[in-house]
Length: 376
Image (cartoon, rainbow, N blue to C red; front, side, top):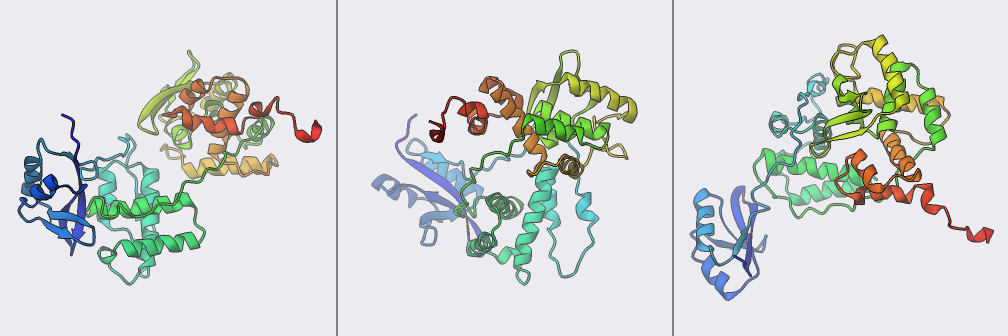
C-alpha cells in the first residue's frame, strides 16, 4: 500500500521521562486522529506531539494510523551497526591504568555495552578515550545532568582547540553511545551538528621510496610486515588478523576475513613477499597468527606503526608515513600501471567505486598528456 502521509517516531526525554515523539506534516485528518491517543500532548521545546514511552502507547499508534499513514520508525528502533567480530574483547589497557582521584573514568556500564554490541577493540579504545575527555571537561557535574547545549559547548571548545573533524565526529559518536545506547535514550541528540568531513587527498609514496622503506627495516619480520601491507593493500587491522592458513601460496592469494564492513575478500600475494615470508616462518615459527607478539598473542598495532615510522626515518623519507600510506600507495601504483578501477576496488575491499576514485586524483597517469602551459 502506498501512503501519502508519514509519521516519524522519535525518542524524547522530557523532565527525565521517556516519551515517543510524533513528527508529521499537519493536516485535518492527522490532526484529528492524533488527539484520540491517550496521554497525547504538544511539546513546545521539540515542536511535536508526544506520548509516554510505553508498549501500549506504541501499539495504539500503529493501530490508530493503520491504513492512514506510514509509521517511519527508522529513528526509533535502533539496530547495531557494529561488526560481528570474532576477536576477543580486550580492555586490559583500561584496567591496568594508574588511577587518579582527580580524573573521571568511563562508567563500567559503558564498557559492558560496548562488549555486548561487539565493537572492535580499536573502536572501544577510541570511544572510551573520547568519552573520558568529554566527562572530564565537566568534572564538577554529573554526566546524566548534561544536555544538548552542554554538548554543543564542548564541541565548540574542541573546534576552537583546532581538533580535527574526525576527532570531533568520533567524540560525538562516543557521547551519543552513552546517552542513546547505555542509558537507553536513542536519538536524544539527533540534532547535534557534525562538522563537514575533510576531503584531503591521500599521501602516496613513489615506488622507489617504497623499496627504500622495505630495505630500511631492521629484520626479516619487520620486512615482511611492511612489504605485505604494501603489496596486498592491507589495512593495519587486516594484517594483524592474518593467520597462517590465510596465505594461499598455491593460488598466490591472501584471504582477508572479517574486514571493514564485516566482509571477506581475497587480495594478491607478491612472489617476492612470499619468499620473505618463508624465511620469516623458518626463523620465527609463529603458531596461530602470521605475526605474533612475544607471548604468542596478536601483534600490537602500535608496534606496526613504529616499525614503519622507524623504517621511513632510516630511509630518509621526509613524508609522514603510516600503514595506510602503504595501502594508498598500493592502489595508486596499480592505477598508474593501468589496472581497472573496479579490480582495485575489489582488492581494497571498498563497497563502492566512489571511494576508490580518490586515487585518480593522485595517480600521475591521470595527468599524462596534459601539457603545462609554461612549456607550450
